[in-house]
Amino acid sequence: MTAAKLPAQCESKDDVRAEIDRIDQALLSLFAERHGYVTRMAEIKTDPHEAYDPARIEAVIGKVRSRSLDLDLDEDQAELIWRTLINWNVNYEKGIIAARKRAK
Image (cartoon, rainbow, N blue to C red):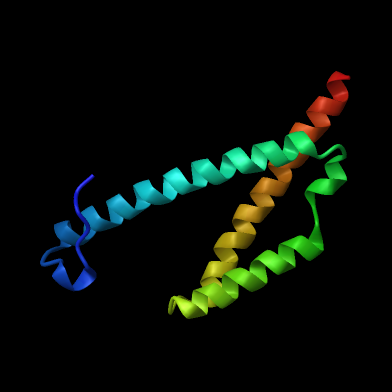
């Protein structure tokens, strides 16, 4: 992986695109790591209804919004991304748990 350039150091569209590609790869790696924990959570939970925990979801969203502000990011956009991620994870967990229950 190439060394990172700050946005102001990018002198062309290709420079900017290369940095965005670098960041996208890092994000994918982090999502893959996170997915491993989501899978483990699905293995620990025993009922598909456990996958949806409104209090936990709102706590996570609250942290995301607060951290977004600290990072000078649009908190609404960050919330949308995280809600999408959480919804996908909830459905994934439900599927894993339900499949395990059917197999018994």
